[in-house]
Image (cartoon, rainbow, N blue to C red):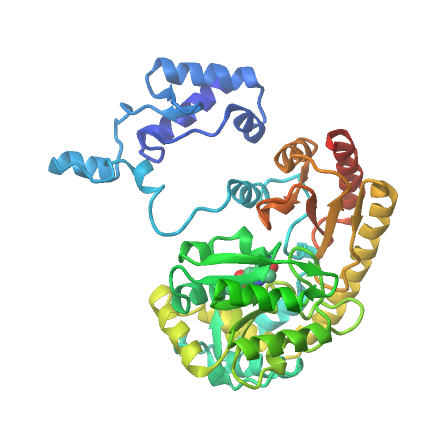
Length: 483
Ligand code: PMP
């Protein structure tokens, strides 16, 4: 069958099964060509056939939609509304529903990245997870073998705070960073991200304000905003948050909480020094300001061990501390934790029980063995060595290709180099041009909406060859676009 016919047949099957309901916006032609690997003319022919059949139509705001009258076989609330004769309040069309609901969608650029990360052949220069080759293959297999060689406990639901053996193992792990946490103060979550969701939903009133570093990872997801929480972003210097500014902003905004990533901040890589950590604890103590400390990257130090976490300095139960196995051992295991006062973790556990009834018990079992068996500690030593090498390699490339174009920090840990361009440009345009050249970027505006001159580079994902090629290509594009 000619290509254009294959494409139109595919569209027809989607429309007639109701997978693509009436009114659904189709992806733009250029993107369609890229995804299908065909010429524009092929796509134009296919779309022409579909329009002639009355299955698609141009939409008011530009672009193309599934035609409103393409109802053959359509399912969903519109079908229900027709059969009952009731006109759904939302217009009886799934497209109206998908714009509603309390959770905001991701930023379009984040949606694009989430999709593109699964396309083969792109050089991922900003990805926030370790490359598959950096994740433990053999030692994780060993863990799973050990589990399989012993009688397997029933994979029942776990208690609200999560598996006790895992909480004991996490408690042990935390003590290495000076955090004393009884298993009854630890809640196991499905990744640290769920910890953020639970806190946003369970602890913060709508309309309250959270202080945070700007830029921050938290701006790139909508967990807090969807819960009606507002942000007040704070500046940093090379040693982290500025205590005076923090105090002034906390008073001015009557902040409900401070969210901070003190060790190897995402996206800037900044490490908060010990003095700042003490100052921050003093200020928060004086103001009665609760702190949410995100320790996602704290064990990934590459030079010296970082100062102890804020939680290790906490004598008042002021700090909630988040941890995760995602950044070193396995992002897909989906195991993280929240450490905090017992009433707080119990409140969050109660919401978690209403959300997913607990993290996967198989994942919890594997995570417990991974930590208890000393595999984590051993893996961290190897991983730090490999990340150090990758960081130094990327820094060398930046020296070669970006001298005069940008400046950057030398991160003491984590995954990220925060590239600060010497001029401004349209980050959306840069993203597109880089994509055309086969390079996937995480631009600064994901982490601070007003940003127009930063890129989050990650040395954790692309191979050395890919970095070599990608950084050179990127410098070239930026050189052409920057004013
Ligand atoms: N916090 C920070 C600072 C992160 O960078 C991430 C992952 N990008 C998370 C939390 C969430 O990680 P996970 O849910 O995989 O544990």
